[in-house]
Each structure stands twice: as structure tokens, then as C-alpha cells.
Image 1: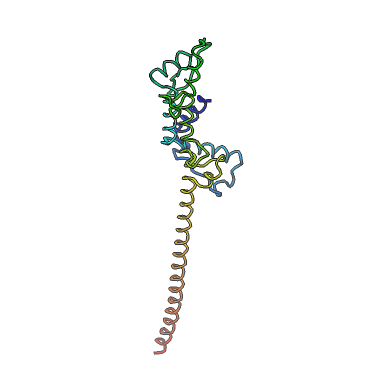
Image 2 (image 1 turned 120 degrees about the vertical axis):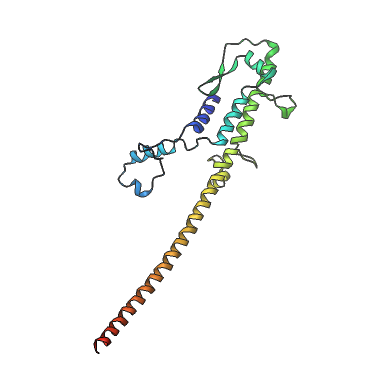
Length: 223
């Protein structure tokens, strides 16, 4: 499960945005763009447009580094984990957990093995165990309960956190953008009304001038 998580996180912030054949970036499709496209074509386009959308995301990069540090403790803790077959492997820029076995555990080591996974500084231990460190990282980034939600939950919400789903950073930014769009649409509408009225007034004035010019021409023709 750990390997699956770090692989997904690393891929999410490492995948670069795709480009179309003409070198342009994939942009969200408008309703007009979708006209004439099949559902499969729309789906394929949107999947390509989403690729790389989290490229170089700082929160995901920090999450990956924190998870990597959690499974590679130094000192006696790291040495003991390696002695019972819990190791890390680095390949293609990705640090994963590997398990060598079977490992024979002596009767006197049972408590030590337990502590290697579950001990906690919150309970008086000098260091955190492997699973404790991983849990602290996942809670810091993905906790869906409590007064303070995880960093990613606060940022993007979650279906598992109803309050955060309705109040998060990205959603609030979208609301602000929508408000700005509405504000500028109102300004544009007011400008259109303003120039339409000026055009109408000028048109009336031109008609009046044309009428007066005709009248003057008629008067001049009488001399």
C-alpha cells in the first residue's frame, strides 16, 4: 500500500502537461468546442488535458519527501528494520519499501519488533516507529476529521470530509474567479449599454443634421 501511494503521488507531480500536435497546450473544452465531437473524443481529449495538471505541485512533492523519510529512519531504528528485512529500494527516482524474508525473530525480539512499528514519541518513546511515522505524515496531509484537516483536504476537499468538500482553497478560488467574471460581465454590459446609447444619440443627431441640411439645400435652391 505504501509503494502504491508513493508511486501515485510521485507520478502526479512528475508527469508533465501534454501538448497537441501543433505544440499548443490542451485547454478546457467549451460547449462550442464539443459541438461535432463524439463522447469518446471528448473523453479522450479531457484525459489528455488533465495529464500534468499537478506538475511540480509543492504539496505533493513535500508529501512524497515526507513519506520517503518516514520509511528510511537512521540510527538504531533503521538498522533494526533492515535486520528484520524491512528495507528501501531506489529506482527511476522512486523510493519504495522492499521486504526480505523469511526472517527468524527470537523470543526476546518480539516486543522490539512491535515497537519498531508502533512506538510513539507521544507515548514517551525516544523515536517514532515505522507505522507511527507513516500515519503522522498521512494525517498531516490527508486527515478528514478534527478541527484541522490535512493539507490536501484543506486545499482540495474530499468526499470523506463533507465540510471540507464545501469549503476548501481551490473551491474558494473558483468562487472568487466566478465573482470576478460576473463583475466584469456586468461592467461589459454597462459599457455596451453606454456605447449603444451614444450610438443611438449620434444616429438621431445625424438624422437631424441631414434633415436640416436638406431644408437648407431647399432654401438655397429657391434663390
